[in-house]
Length: 105
Ligand SMILES: [Zn+2]
Image (tube, rainbow, N blue to C red; front, side, top):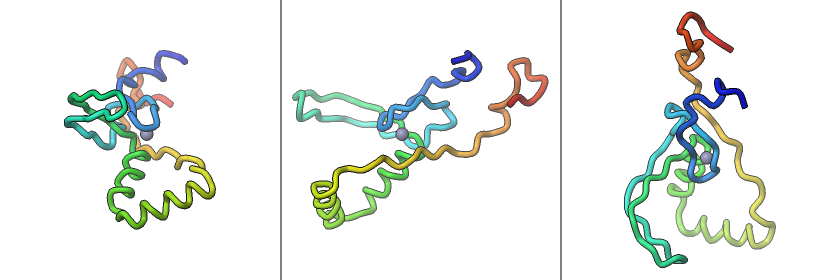
């Protein structure tokens, strides 16, 4: 990948794993974690893309009855495809040429 396409991709979505620019981080969760599988605890900071943010906020809004129905659906049909990623409209400054003389792309 050419360097101009990877410049600024120093963040990532910790759900879907896609590289993000700082301006594309849509949500951040900070706090303590408990790993019940590895029997570990600690502090964590998780950043999300806008698509994963939308999906997680949708789950937070739904109640336990919805969660039970989803489990029954998955057990019957499988998990299905993940929703496509949604990114905010980029600010025009992101497309300035490296010398600042004009607008790229
Ligand atoms: Zn994501």
